[in-house]
Length: 222
Image (tube, rainbow, N blue to C red; front, side, top):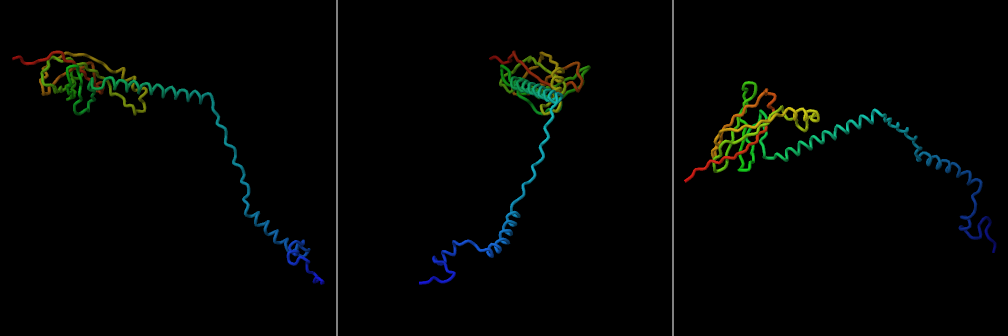
């Protein structure tokens, strides 16, 4: 049986394995060129690397400035810690006021708790007269209490920008005196107490602290 001319003995399967003819190769060239063009168009170009960052130049002056700032922060932290410790140690042992204070503060003594209010400040000779109201919330009377008053310029606030320099200046301005009074503190009543601090201007009583001690008890006998 003769095979047909031009037909592969394996049929169509044989045609799949044959090499392309010259004419077919010529037809494929535009297609390959188009594919290469499309691939090159879809492939992003490599971006140029960013310029290198400039290296920071740290001089000896910069290091000294940083060291100075660190020392200043450390000193301020020590002052804040000292201020906080002082507040904790004197909690309710004294009453603290400024000229605009309103209301009373409790003061704890060995014999009981008293309420103290700064009523007014008035000039007196070369100083200032401080008028306090002392409230005896006990059920017995006390006589002749002793007061310890401290006064100075306005106490700086921790949030103040110049707190580091202002705190030592304020602390150096504080003066203290002790004064025994001859006042009867009646049970359940307010009693007025006047204490003169001198020499002192109105600016030098921006901070006032008061402690008290009572040793004499007055009780009726039957």
